Image (cartoon, rainbow, N blue to C red; front, side):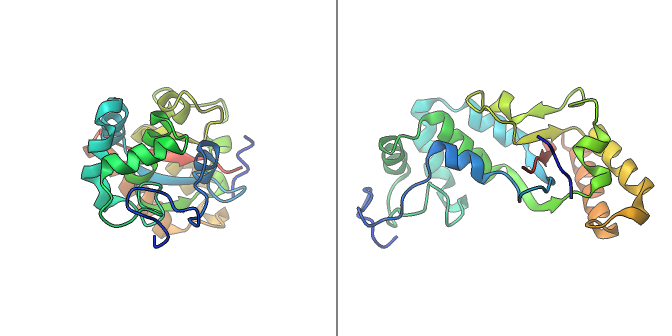
Length: 208
């Protein structure tokens, strides 16, 4: 592990008083962090992320409507809403709950842009070991994508950055404790995907 150092109770379109409390903006942000003390990586759709961030506030409801079937069960865009509630009704309700458009976009990115399963990173591939001088040139911090955030939760890596991680991991393969050859091969496959499609990146998620 790395020490990063760093439903049923709802009426149509309205939140029932018996429905579970919604996550506030700060809670949504914290939910994205991986397990305590463990950094992780995940394939990321940067092209879709850019599309989401470019959506105007007036077009946000229509975007949500198109993506409804792609949200997870506990997404803020699905959880507690009655079947048949439209995208515009959901966005309007969330706005009444105090969630501004930048937080809704953040949730859209969280729901739609992280691909494949999260994979924990061994010490020899962690940020503090491989990038001890700081974020490498070309990497993109989530705080650049979401300026309202105060804490950096993930960093988007280019294929050459992933290569550095792989080189370090393979150089210390006999010392790895939570990654083995299948995980290294998976990380390698993500790197190859990013080389073929520059709209994909590898997200490095910081533990806490």
